[in-house]
Image (cartoon, one colour):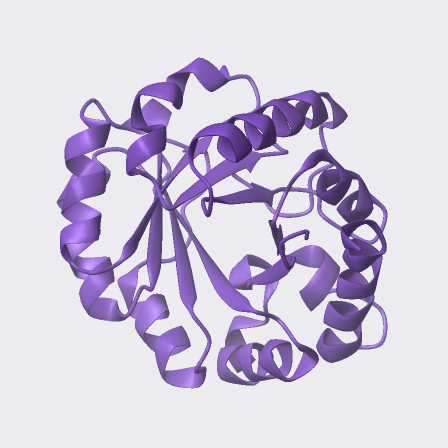
Length: 225
């Protein structure tokens, strides 16, 4: 039996003047997680949001708050994001010299730990920590900005990682992030993704946030059945 597909609504594209309302609408629409993209202007070009926004999101929803740290030296900030209310924290393999230690730091707080890879980073970077992760994340755009075009060359990478997880670590999520919409969702689900992060497709979609979540889920579920 296939695993249920979960939708993680990324507030990167939300209207920050009405953040609580946007998060509540995503929850009403059926999003499973709220995703928070943290960028430092060093690991990626853009500077975005910090722990104070995670606190605001946590106060606005009962859903899990999924924090994606696109920052250098993530180990310096994990404790702060845990206190802010993160349910899961994903760090980049490219940004940490001591991934095992960092994952243990995250999980010692009772928070789920994930590792992300940029599109051009080979899967071999994940192999040494597969037994230690709760979630993997494959970027399907180069991180740094919302609204980018999906990189189709990552699809074989998703398929390969899905095979590894099925063989070695049952229960580990395979999240994808970047350019996910009603067109690309069925493709990544067919390749083996189990968690879809969407920003623009949800918060800038036609008909409002709730309708956009519902359409994305319908598109994903076509291939999940």
